[in-house]
Length: 99
Image (cartoon, rainbow, N blue to C red; front, side, top):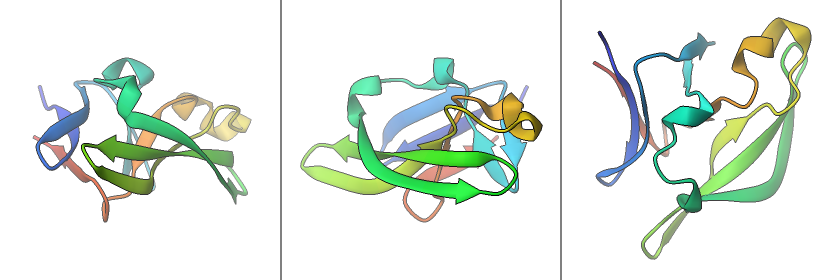
């Protein structure tokens, strides 16, 4: 069975055998998060006309903070209810693989 993994500099942020894929992004369920302490909630929010309002996390790894590296939909619209509270990562900031 394939496994989806999100990591940065060797630190595994999320890993799951079950996830959602939307618009080419892997959305990890909350249970896939390895250490919630490295996720720092930010004030950043964006809007998608069919998913709703996204909220963001920065990732704290050692002395490094990767700004707004992950996002999630706490209250998605009905068409995106399958990704409620799932976390996706910017591929330019975090390595996301499915193997």
